[in-house]
Length: 137
View 1 (spheres, rainbow, N blue to C red):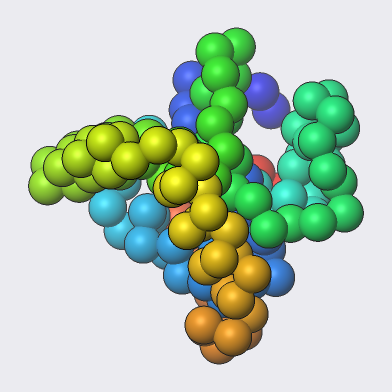
View 2: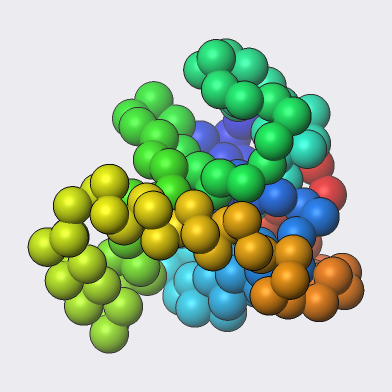
């Protein structure tokens, strides 16, 4: 199974959050270089990722970006890295780095606190091609 994702960037997200599902869909539609795979934090794979790093396993209000055997990023750092990897106009997000991480993460946390109010909770259904990009769907 590892062969499928070991060279990818894995986005861990709250599988029950409408905002999170919106962003997963947004990334899927723009991932022209096939850089990303996805796993919900609630999945066995997501829980293993969190447990191995002594991260919170019951609260799912943080997005993680993991490059196996390299690094993992959280919150605004993950968002900026995803935008950079998508390339094109999204590389302009590097401007966000002029703000301290603490400030960016406060904005991230505020959005996260209100995420259940911001988007409807309908379930996103990936296409068969997109489904291949999910770990444990």
